[in-house]
Amino acid sequence: MIVMKFGGTSVEDGKAIERVAAIVASRLEQKPVVVVSALARVTDSLVTMSQMAASGALAEGLRLHRQMRQRHFAVLASLLNGRGETEVRDRLQTLFDSLEDVLRGVAALGELSPRTSDNLLSFGELFSSQVVSTAFRARGMDAVLVDSRQLVVTDASHTRAVPQREETNRRLRQSLKPLLHADRVPVMGGFIAATADGIPTTLGRGGSDFSAALVGAGLGARKIEIWTDVEGMMTTDPRLCPDARRIAVIGFDEAAELAYFGAKVLHPATLIPAVEKNIPLYILNSRNPESKGTCIRAHAPASKTIVRSIAAKRGVKVVNVRLPRIVAAQGFLHAVFEAFDRHACPADLVSTSEVSVSVAVEASRHLDGLIDDLKRLGNVEVEDNKAILCLVGEKLRGRIGVAARVFSVLASAGINVHMISQGASEINISFVIEERDIPEAVKQLHAYFFAEREGDPPSLVKQVFRGKAVPREGTRSFTRATGQGL
Ligand code: ADP
Ligand code: ASP
Ligand code: MG
Image 1 (tube, protein in one colour):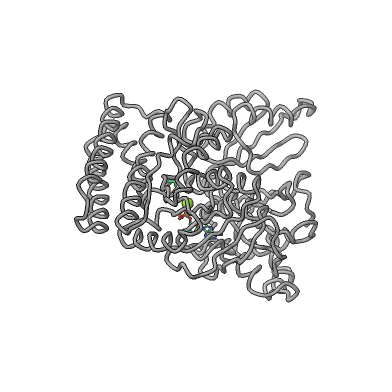
Image 2 (tube, helix red, strand yellow; image 1 turned 120 degrees about the vertical axis):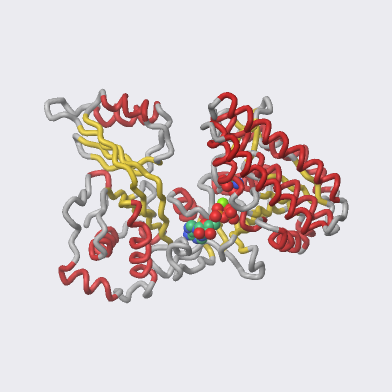
């Protein structure tokens, strides 16, 4: 069997869903399980209407609700042309009524808990899976709508719930195997799950990719296909740099680093189940189903370029902790990291010296408690509006001097580097820069590392080493943790 996951843009309207139906129909003999995201922009809109409801603007929230309902009904009508529409319209209407009830409840309380937020956000995939499964049936496929909340079991860490793999696998096998055996096509919403007691949870934004991988690993899929709106995994985000090129084959390690450091095309947790079961993943374009896409697998041929791809992660904060001079440094680092651990706040990037630590973290994490604890250890300063720029490639392993080249390229573009770290995996080098500098930094670095083949020093190198480009003042230089010499 295989898993086919279709992202928001792949199911954004009737035409897109028609394409999806044709793609799935072309693979029926491979026994697909289909995982769908909410229609494009629906989850964002659910977030907005939830916040409106919680902040006294219920009427505006309900206006968005009405628009969302009209959109889904219009998509359904365009797909069915009146055939068997009443039953599914009733089911959709019931779901929209429940959504309205929850919104009214939030407005009455004036508060939006993570648990209620998960409940609200889960509607996007409940709607889309209804619409898509109905469209499949109208085209003669024996599609069965499956409720992911009954199959994917997680803990109760709402908004980023962690799957309980054994129980999930047991339920996936029990429910889906008989359907596949009978040549039926299960259709389920991605992103959504529930605790063992049935309380709805979500796997974190962009989590439908992760759902697909969980299903693939649970059922022992031959491959997992992630259908999206680009040609595959590319040398950088094509929205930032139109010169980005498709990568034909990439290793699990490299793809995981890229996903973690902001390549939105893949949710960061997706590769964990795939690696465990050694299942290849394919990134494919639903608007161009004939194109080859990207294969992500255990081993990939070496890239021609030093860097395989460049990722950028926005929404980052840097927490600086500095020990007061008079205090002994012993135990300082341990205490700082222990505090991060206690507050379940993963450090994306770390730079240390004996008396100071800088840690880059996702800005969306709640930091108040952590900061209070860190203030007991030293002086704390938090810098906002930062981003992490990450260069990934197997060829970076043990390679000297790449960081210096990055510094030079960025310096000549007038871009300040705040922190640098060479990842523990040795296949990435990451930099903290201002968020607003991301487009220019990516464009410049992509031009530098991908314009010419390795071995032909790009023209910029000559320019840079004529002494023009030196890291600007204010650039924090390497510290012991970074490992890589300039
Ligand atoms: P979906 O709705 O299908 O899940 P996403 O918007 O989550 O799609 O992910 C696809 C987007 O990821 C692309 O439109 C592209 O802008 C972005 N992206 C970021 N980095 C990369 C990369 N290295 N390769 C391809 N796409 C990337
Ligand atoms: N619909 C969810 C989101 O927008 C999950 C996904 O698209 O993967 O985050
Ligand atoms: Mg996505």
